[in-house]
Image (tube, rainbow, N blue to C red; front, top):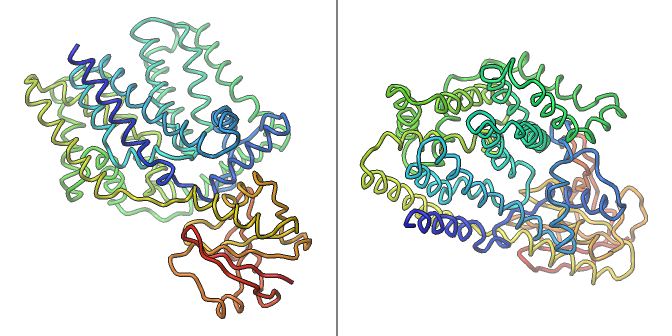
Length: 480
């Protein structure tokens, strides 16, 4: 009973830390606006999208992300807060899955501590709160592990169907999530190959069936995304100079910093080494081997991936340090020592969360500014431009303008007699300066091209009429 109460407290803590002032904290920029524009247009047209977001590398994700957020988008009457709440709630569900899987593999007490640290980790909260296609990957990674457990331990072979479904949905979310294929194939090769062939075939067919819309798009477009992905990987593997040996160490420290949020990298790496390898010395079960090989292979893959120091690239291994931690904690036989260590780490997490609590007001800013522009423009067609240090695209403003049924027009159509320049930079230019500026076009859908390829708009060809400040933004109105 006490353990159930403790689990309930952990889940309530996970809910509070993720949803506290979420509308003010959630990132809502061009990428989020683009995704909602695509999802909304598909819903209004009564069509299911065949592909998902387009990455900076020119490779489409699968459509599963859009399928996941569409119901919540409908229920919220197309307001972004609905999908934001949904994807953030997956982080709470992941906390429970950490506990459930940890209990199955390593015992209930270590699982409770691992779930507590996952619930309170500021880095995990930051990376799994908001609206972005990498966010659901840890949730589906845990579901994949759960399906593997049901097949291997519980002998419930119908879970091959769920394994195929979860894996297919996961790899469609974000390009680095393709790596999830390797641990699953490795497990199948060493544990299943030659056994249960009919169920394996059914699982594979489920994987393909869930991937079918994406495959249809590829067939219609000469498999353009597969070609671009192969070219991208070949370019990075063959043309990129050898990376510094510190790169994988930085990646390792970054992952284990989700558990211990303070301290130098050498301390974090030492903690990670103890958590990872001490259970092996003690003869730990094969699940620890499985998670550690998955984790280290993922780190190795990321050393060849451009921009891998950004935490979201490692979304397919986010959950593994916590499962390794549960394995390590299972070696501690003294319950009091176990819980004291877990609580100390959780307190450090909570202090770091409090000290780094940041409010961006992205959502309210986009909504307020868009309402202001809609009212100011009246029924006259207009275009918009954005000056921002955080987003090269104005799609988040454009999304709310679409909701307001405002007559926003692309600049290239030359139908607009009004131009609104939205500045969200920390310091915006004054009226005299802005009239002389050239600003690159920010209606870059589905993605922004390289800066050198973007067309610049000469504001000297427009007449500045007025300027206003609201919602931490400066809005300049130009007319021809």
